[in-house]
Length: 204
Image (cartoon, rainbow, N blue to C red; front, side):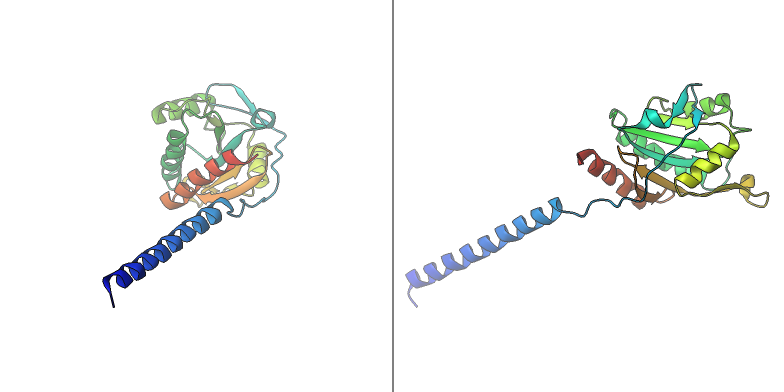
């Protein structure tokens, strides 16, 4: 076979490989842009007003049109709460300067976790109430709110610290719809939460 024939065959092969790579890239791009939307797991409707660590009222109307993440904890929790708060702090830091996101942590021990206690707890974390509300209120209303989010919260004298609660972070969109649950004690799950928050920002 002459050199010119070899050169022509090589050129055809190179073009075929290049076209295949371009097609693969385009396909990957299309698949990436057409990911299934996050599920709609129900609408949150909380009729109660709580009080945050700065003594300011927090209610559902304040969150309308805002993406937010909700969870339940108590400051004296000896088990999962410290891990949850370290993971939520990662979310806070990732969106510290982005007012499209609010974090909302409800204490399930309001008798102990007063505004002053929450204020001191928040100060140790170095967070702003404007971006991350830690709220207290009437116990029954807080527990009812947990059920609204599809999460568990109850007193149990046999549990560590005297309470049982879910370790999940709940992601809520601008329309007040639950779009996902994430394990607040696992870094990989919280990594996914951060990505999904950005996905909600891109939704109309």
